[in-house]
Image (cartoon, rainbow, N blue to C red):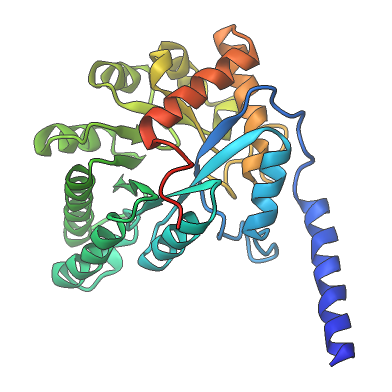
Length: 302
């Protein structure tokens, strides 16, 4: 037994040291704290890198001035895990949903509706503050039946968000027009967040007109993504959010490495630079906006 405990301890130490080499170094802490609007603490970046334990992720984020995160479900299983973690961890609120690419994996609309009904039950929990990520993704989904299931799922998730008076968190990939059309046709919830904003200035104008939030991730720092920077500059300040989409989309200069909520300060400072304002002003605006969307991180704990 002692040898087994030693081996477990040795393995844990090696894993910790390995993570220190694989994960980017800590950035300079923020003087004004803010939130990661969208992350997946349970995801592995690739097969070679196990996910950093959620508590270690959060502790590192706290050390650089982060106030909390929104942990986002993409399957029934991960949505349940997200809601359970949020119920007991004060730094975490949850979003629950079936990802757009998850919907076509169900055999038919009856099976899909059964899973969506479970999402609807999770949405009633006090620390579940958003339905997401949901939306449309025409990059991976093809075929009339698959598109139908994805569209049906999106509309049902919108309904659940409205019934619970919480935000809907949009995944929009190569589907800008269809996402906007759906929101307008079925009636958008009061709070709509375009997660990992991937649109241009034209979509930003639409978001401005409708009071929809635009959440920018680390990919705004990539040189080729000028459309995202143009949208940021056009966006109404009170509609801007920041996120990691961790473990994906690490900002420059760490593109291609594992992302984590503790890297948000890099994106915040980059956004501030693009807007010609101080990082503290940017962080304060992001904090105010985030709390307007999701409410207080201190309420509803088990």
